[in-house]
Image (cartoon, rainbow, N blue to C red; front, side, top):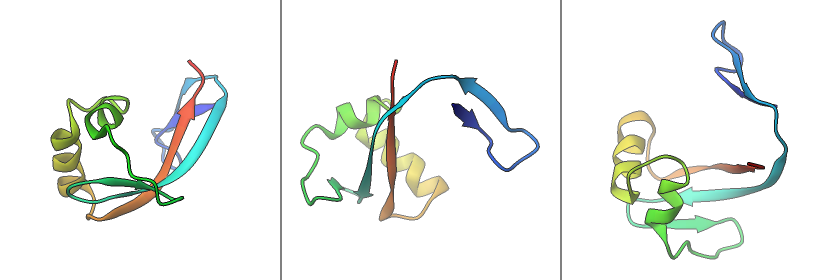
Length: 79
């Protein structure tokens, strides 16, 4: 199950689907690194898969809403 607003009164089900993979990522101002140490070669494509215009757009969002560098988890869902 894919939700938004978890642990808030605005929690809402977005979609019933299956998680197909997870991976930890480290996002810096100029690159993205997976937990295994490999670097993302197509950073614009990575950002676009998360509905950003491009890598610069994603970095601008992180600078406004989080602190860089960012360490988190990417979750891929079955479409």
